[in-house]
Length: 193
Image (cartoon, rainbow, N blue to C red; front, side):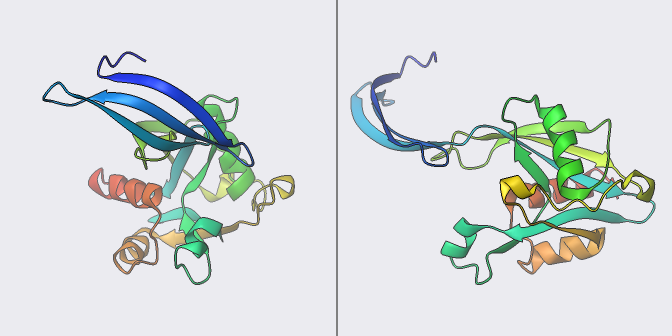
């Protein structure tokens, strides 16, 4: 870390239950040269990868639907979220991770995903950086039903949705996951579907 306007005073671990939550006390130098003591909680779940699978001939995309507890606690009545396929990197590089996640979650076997960018989704509280990919798919690439891994307590429904319908679902608030909206808009701007 090389920002000369930041001096870490101390880091206290608050939890390692599912992921890591730390309280960071630090000094921060403001524009006028004064030093302020600040404190922030930082949630570290590792970095992730996300992908939009698209079929330009059929004008469709593959999305997933699954229960997300944090959305449920924040007013999502069912807790169900429609999302692009995604997962944590763990020990994998981003490309290997997303190839594996696509097969586990959707049942499609892909080989050459295209990385389009890296983004921080919630940089004020979460350290996670997500690596974003796109890849074409075809019916011939389907090798299993998908649905996720039982040992990871995943129960994922695989959805094939018309691209224009997916964009309308964003407008209606039916798709409200940031990584999914970002990749759908990327596909629209780049005329992928």
